[in-house]
Length: 263
Image 1 (cartoon, rainbow, N blue to C red):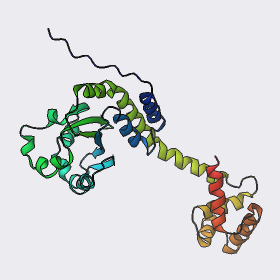
Image 2 (tube, helix red, strand yellow):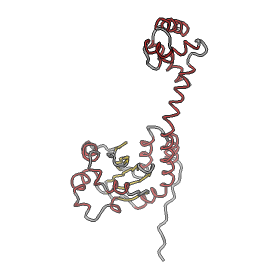
Image 3 (spheres, rainbow, N blue to C red):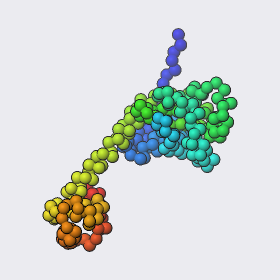
Image 4 (cartoon, rainbow, N blue to C red):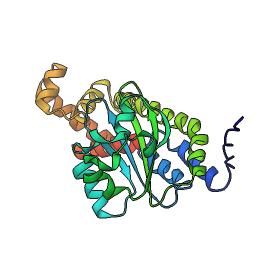
């Protein structure tokens, strides 16, 4: 009876603990992907890593990379993102719903090195081996981290990735949920701050005028929306400027942003 290879234990201290802590803290932020790549560098220190989003039939979108060779960067943006990705075995695996960790050699078809994709793109970007981490965001979207290395990566590195995968998948899922939650609450916060702006100093009508000014409305539009004359709007504007100790609409915007950012 064959005994399965043991999955190496990963001691989560030192750099590992710091990287995972940073990754949790940055979930839902624009720096999450870069931090994720930094963590993968602990397993594959000498590698070039690209994070690609595949979304249904939309073109592939490279979200981040740490490639240093300009030729590789140019190929990624001018060849891969513009259509070559459709021939990529990683893209095809993602489209089929694959999740987990795999080498390119385990997903690529026989005679891959004779394919058009290999000859026109792959051999110029990946020098020896490539490992992919596949994460399903929803029914339409897959996030794939492609790790290209100069020589065939040891099996222990692949096993480390597989051991970490459930935790990493949870963090990617958390990142996606937080991103979805960010936009609407932000709109709600802005609306709330607009409604309460100047409440302690301004009359209700002056608040109405200030809110519409902050929304970019002109005097004529404000008059039409509030059902009063333009001359009355100008009087309200003069009074609210005096109470807020400002002299222009630009200063009104500045005051609002100061209050908003101070929340």
